[in-house]
Amino acid sequence: MEQERTEIQDLGEFGLIDYLTRNIEIQNASTVLGVGDDAAVIDHFGKQTVISTDMLVEGIHFDLMYTPLKHLGYKSVVVNLSDIYAMNATPTQITISIAFSNRFSLEALNEFYEGVYAACEKYGVDLVGGDTSNSQKGFIISVTAIGEVTPDQFVKRSTAQKGDLLCVTGDLGAAYLGLTLLEREKKIYLESPDVKPDLEGQTYIIGRQLKPEARKDIIEFLQQEEIIPTAMMDVSDGLSSEILHIAKQSNLGVVLYEEKIPIAQESKEIAMKFGLDPTACALSGGEDYELLFTMKQQDYDKIVLNEQISVIGYMADISEGAHILTKGGNKFKLVAQGWNAFKQ
Ligand code: ADP
Ligand code: MG
Image 1 (tube, rainbow, N blue to C red):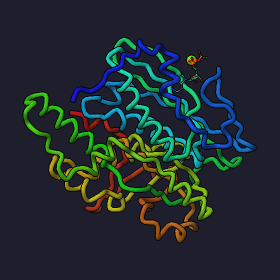
Image 2 (cartoon, rainbow, N blue to C red):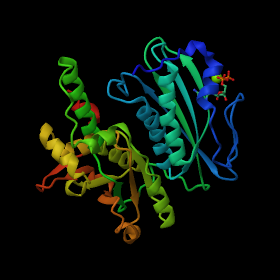
Image 3 (cartoon, rainbow, N blue to C red):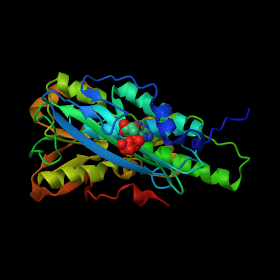
Image 4 (cartoon, protein in one colour):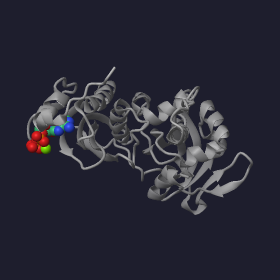
């Protein structure tokens, strides 16, 4: 069956915007005015407003050869919401700006927006605006997320205290392994297009790469347990680099235990198959979008039964530096390699 292809030119810019935004139903009382005017209007009713923005560029941040547009739309929103949750805030609105070449049809943009709206619905945020432009080559996406927080309950990176527990949610390294797998399959495909991709049994790591989730559940859990983390951020660049951000900005040292780093069984198996060290994937792989936070030791009893939260170390005096204690009993200086270090 041939796929339909509607040229964007047939609609024009305003027709396109109308088409892409025709079904919006406002979900938040704070959304006073959404799409359709010169600007959106938001009333956070005495709360503080949190804003974060991100840009995604084809060929740099995503590869359309193995990224379905719907997943891309979903992920573009989720990675921004993750930044809002990382401030201990609740996202309420997003704006989304896109630039695309004439390679993109209405059907393609529609698929992308299906993912955008799926994320809006899941996380309860309103799409209240954006901008639409042409690009000479490639697809460029910019998302701004807006959220609310009870006055002065936002959580920074710089306020961890000596002796605080260092915690991380979910498991780490899988998104990087998913990317490695997809890149490998792409290479094989380009060399011999007839070979069927071997993605059997690897849905977990691929899902973690293509369709990440933001930890709304954890922010709700912390609120319910009346825990305000002393510092927090999301894990987008790899655990070691994020831990060093909290330590440096809080003027502290840190001790991390390798054996405590949560890594899924599926990730361990795939890492072995690729000849990669699972711990290295967690430390330096990126895009897990888990939350890394510090909290007072007194709060430990409140989180101990939550399987989604692992205590992986503690904050120390700055004179102790930043170290990882390995399973073999060695002590190494923690370095931020970022996921680039793994790129072959
Ligand atoms: P202006 O010329 O005042 O910037 P636009 O014509 O760019 O207005 O946009 C009209 C309305 O449509 C605005 O509310 C804007 O936020 C919204 N909008 C534009 N592009 C998009 C998009 N890609 N997705 C969602 N909303 C959009
Ligand atoms: Mg505009």
